[in-house]
Amino acid sequence: MELIAGNPAAPRTNGTRAAVRGAPSPGETARGRRPSAPSPGETARGGPGDRARGSLLGLAVGDALGAPAENMRPSEIRRRWGRIEGFVSDDPAGTDDTEYAIFSGLLLARHGSALTVTHVERAWRLWIADLDEGPFRGAGFSERGTLENLRRGLAAPISAQHRHAWSDGLAMRAAPFGVFAAGRPAEAARLVAVDGRVSHEGEGIYGGQAVAAGVAAAMTGAGVTSVIAAALSVVPMDSWTARSLRRAVTAAQRTYPDRLTMERAVRSAVVVGGYPWTDLAPEAVGLAFGAFAAARGDFRTAVLTAVNMGRDADTTAAVAGALAGALHGASAIPLPWAQAIGPVRGSCLPSMRGYHVLDIAELLTPAEADERGGEGYGGEPPGPAWPGDGKPEHGSEPPGARPGSGKPGLAGDPDGPCDPCAPCDPCDPCGPCDPCAPNGPDGLCDPCGPGDPLDPDGPCDPCAPCDPCGPCGPCDPCDPLGPVSGAPEDLASVPVAGRTAVG
Image (cartoon, rainbow, N blue to C red; front, side, top):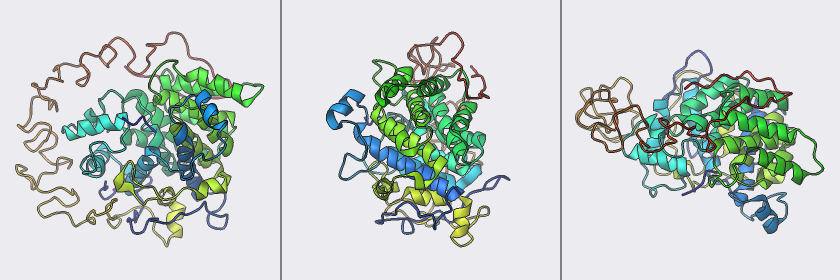
């Protein structure tokens, strides 16, 4: 979980995986039911459906186990509970990690490989920013910054230019992309980056890509080393995320006299001492992969290791659970833990209330769709119900709206009611309907406009013009220690096919 301070349009195919038919309506999803992990008879053990369920149920279990220990030091955890070995609450529940993963999973199920930044931005506006549910209900700092920018009228990728673009808010919702792109780490990394461009930049994107690629590899039953190699293959070798991941895994693979000593070593390898933010993507991803490596992929050990190391414990445990669950399937999750996970409550995203991670796993797995009566991939699916209580069905937009926009008609659009997200709309992004530039084009279509006090009208970061560590400053905007000199550590048993960071 990050520190707490859409309805998708119809899919298009592109020659690879397409979107699934029949994304569930709230009535079809598990409103009020509490499904358990599938039995071997329901889904073939080790098959794609079992691994998909294992990954997303593992994410939800890790989230719920880690939530009470979030932002705590290991010593604080031990003083309060001893060592956490299971749920410490009588009513365990997930956090924004699970709810945002469901949100992104529904979007991915609807659009498949054709997912675009426009789809993602539209969904954020419809199902988060535009809902009257309080100003920032359940939002972490990166979500808060994103919503502030969207409500100011800024569009992606400008919406991701805020102070917490390096957070683990993308990593926490990345597992569905690995489930969807099983066996294709590069595709999983591409898709999660599309999703993340609305809310994250730089290391925040890299963290999500590492998780998505790792899950994609684990979905094939690859070994622990191959899963780690896949994660490292999609992020720049000299990035903070890659350095943290290598350091954590190297520390985890050493021999220690006891579990506590190992956990201290993994923490020391990646945690920036004294730094206040625990939701750093490079740190959270490093700790999660370190726990996964130390456990040699065992689900229970991986999740509990992540929980007991504290920091952003719900996210680190969620990621470790997603990796181990994808590797071994749902049968690897202790049954009492699996049965404790019910439909999400909408505490963070009210529009997701009633959805269950197992529903998302089925949507993202072709074999599962086939088993539900031939609902396959490709073509135009029937419009799903809008994901949220009291929302109109797809196709029942208010009068005067562009079909599928969910918005009332606005004046000034020469090709009909204004839809600033429509790719062929002359109002997008610089026309007279553009909420970022209501007076029409402004030179280079700068959404801030030349008179905006936040925009110096130069190449510098419009959201932090005075920040010496911003994109225009001399130091690394994501690593509080500044640029790292020297070669990164070698990870002996892991082949790395990384690329070099640009810029």
